[in-house]
Length: 116
Image (cartoon, rainbow, N blue to C red; front, side):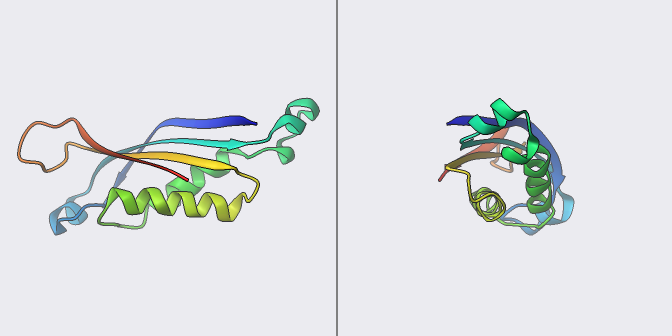
């Protein structure tokens, strides 16, 4: 088993509990790690035998384009899409961070992490 990670993905998107957040938009960061067996790909040097991280990025990008109220929902949608696309994946961990969340004070970001 091994892991593939995409870290520091950034998107401008329209997520948030408050209507204003879904209207104005905000910056979001995503970190993603999957666990899978890529021993054959490591030996054969073939992309077709592993999980293409370009395809992982596109999954995240597509989910980020669909407005949602909760970071938890976004994380779950990313996980669902990864498992639907790559059934050989054994686990997925994703963190979703909203920059400068509306908490009534200074806060660099609010982040949720989900692992399945």
